[in-house]
Length: 147
Image 1 (cartoon, rainbow, N blue to C red):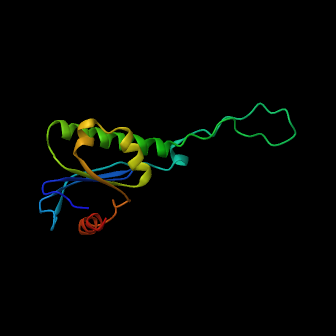
Image 2 (image 1 turned 180 degrees about the horizontal axis):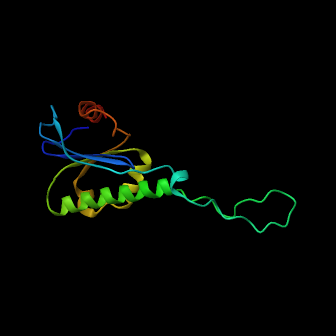
Image 3 (image 1 turned 90 degrees about the vertical axis):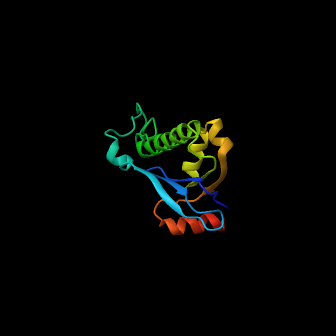
């Protein structure tokens, strides 16, 4: 996949987003960090205070929860993806980029897609369903080029 000169690349997961700008050209990209956002998102067991509700019982078997435990960790990751989509919308509406590539794990990418604004969609050159937030910039460039 080619990265347009001056193009924006968002590399995100549910806890971290990197906004990178290509200061090189399509053949020899040079991604530079424009903005980094991270959030602390503890595991659900560390965020929830109560377990699922219990049934009313009555039988001789074990009592089971009437509801599944809320996955606070996933809720927060989804909220973070929605925030990334809003930042992209704001940047698109203020013409801060003409070309966009998004790199995110499949779950995060799916959540981002739910919140794409039409201006973001019109500038979207490609998506890559991979988690690259922990990679070096040079590795990210190469993985995108090879895709």
